[in-house]
Image (cartoon, rainbow, N blue to C red; front, side, top):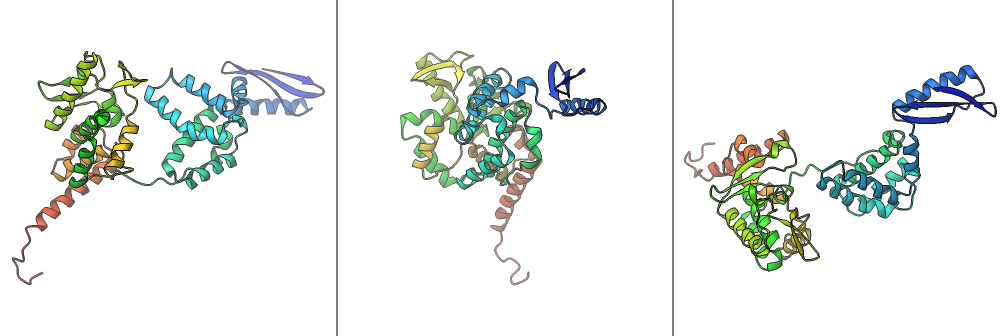
Length: 355
């Protein structure tokens, strides 16, 4: 660390955590300069002063900064995380694309949140979008200045929607109507029959499918507790056999090939997993009169049916992987409701008018 003068004003020249800082201390008094130098070091260590690299990043237009952010994330996080962040950045680019990243204020973030809510976007989605922006601002060493003035929007406690039997018939009858929906149809059958998440199904390889034992091994999940082996019912087996026939016809049935392979420009690449069946899913749910029904709600439907059948908490967790205490309590409530409805059907006035 060193102090030096420029035009009677003291400056600090110091290196912290491998980064060099040259900052004006804005005083002509040497004793005061030493005190401010110590304060500067404390701020740097607390992340309240941008590093030279952070300052250069902060000067970039938001769109350019977002491209750099995504490029760096590809080497650090899972592919699905990069895809998620890329999707969250789409509306952020629309609103902030030409603005310098470092010039974004808490007021500007608040205006963005209000605009998204006015567009009918949920509070949870807005919070996730701002979460990606927060990561970029941290990289620019700007978030510490804004954090106290940026608030999250309330999020609805929505555990998901479970289909009733008639709705399931509508959905799966519609899904079987068009050959172009076959993959989405099979994925939906598997989700409704196994409690699997979409991301779990997309990462299944043929080596994970045991037709002889009618079992499916989940090796890639939302978290470590999601790794499990699931017994397959007749519907799930039928869906996997149809996918197997397709895979063999395409030459994509090796053990290390994905059950749901990537398809870009009408070219199948079985060494990469499918990223999404969103378009087919949106079209078939609209066809079934279930617009807005999420693919993930099939997992909720399956777990709800298991709970209503009387399955224990241990069975629910073993089949579905991780369930929070809140979710377990929810499904315990579902199970008790089903039991209550069942015993109420036994009531036939056996005690006459007695209460």
